[in-house]
Length: 248
Ligand code: MN
Image 1 (cartoon, rainbow, N blue to C red):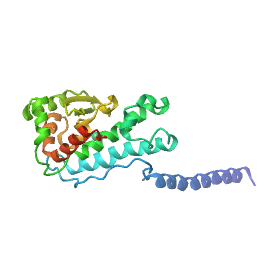
Image 2 (image 1 turned 90 degrees about the vertical axis):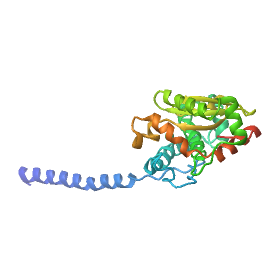
Image 3 (image 1 turned 135 degrees about the horizontal axis):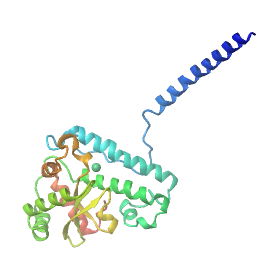
Image 4 (image 1 turned 120 degrees about the horizontal axis):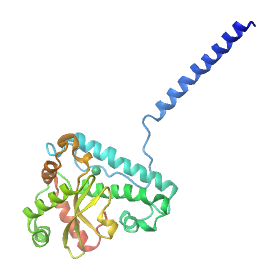
């Protein structure tokens, strides 16, 4: 073989090797393009209403992304964590784990705080929303009048607290076993459950909850959100709180 043809041979061989490796790379990308969410003890609860149920107050696309992608990601992360930490995650009630974050090992504490907090918050959120949700009455209305100054003041104060929450977070109404209500905010995916409290209801003020429709107008979203509250579910949660059976 002449030096010319040897060079040609080697460069042709290198080209073949490169060509052979290209399809493998493409194949690897294609096979991981749509990963299946890991299954495990945590599940995203299906929405009990269609994603367009709250148009025009909350658009269907926002509901889809929020429920399937955002909540879905928290649950996928939790199932990954549960695989390697089955004793710490998945075996106990969500509210028990959240109420004792310091009992978790340091390597997973922060991830559990964010992802289990997110799972609890969103599970509550989907539950207390619904079309034709009625209005507050009975014991819930009496508690709102007694502890929060009546419906009008409650809604004004709740929206103001949600508006003041800097960056991402939530505005909640907490409920004691005696049925006493209070408005509280938390950053990120924190929840009053982490302080041993219980949540009656709450609104998500992360931008992902409203940005497609409302952009920077969080106040407009907060106001419109009241049209989506299912007061029958809120009443069920109030009764459960007083009975000591309210979880997340
Ligand atoms: Mn959210």
